[in-house]
Length: 369
Image (tube, rainbow, N blue to C red; front, side, top):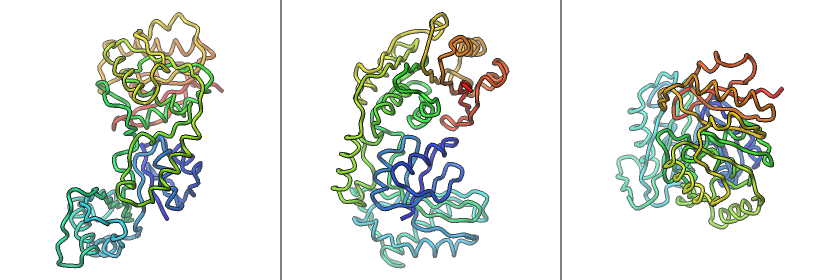
């Protein structure tokens, strides 16, 4: 079978490693899209284990040079949808067109749904959707006139781990937080810091990674509700995942000046199963200026349109000072405050392009070479 994992931009290399680790064979990597092959069990593994993925799709059809709507319709109609639609499932169609001759997403959606119905019940017949059944989401994606038709096996995006019930004013997605921890190079037996922890997403993801906890264990997936895999297979994969978890204590320090956010962070950590395992503290990040720090710092400080700050330049100067003063402190920060480049010593940080909630950002990682 062929699968497609969508990701946030800039973390494709991490997603590839995740897929390969659970047995997937990579076939193609493009912007925010990883195409790979494997058996049906792989679908369960990737959904359970991908920390940076967005949604996992089954690739139902793939065709080049799709430049007219009649051809578009026929390609989709030929797909054997009956193996997936078992209970008159409601049909959700999403579409996107990039650099292609067919550029009307609304027309694509309408024709795609009509083709699916014709495939299921025949031309001219009525498909009665059962609103009590699990909806099936089909994505019709056109890029450079190449059509891909895909079925969403994940349901809600993979960053919805199930532990975050509340968030702050400008939360970071769990998938991006996990990517930052992985990019930071944190050695798990060393200290881990987040000076702007907000609702706790970065330290929670750090502890999940350190303990090797599968991020999908506390949630359900569309493939379960659609019956695409036998329940015994799913339960076995979850049991195997639980057996791979690490025990032990990790030194994770999370602080913020907002007491209300810290209470939310503690609740989120408790729901993730980490009650008392992350050291949350009300503290201004400037309190760390006079301290000797070792380990890894990963933070998402205030910046630009995402969150207002009275004196961004002074704040970022202080963050840089903390990194420069502590030779044994590694890691970095994510920000869209591009002036940070002008404040710091040349080549002191490596810069990686990312997106946080659709906003262009960079992960400035301390250069330890």
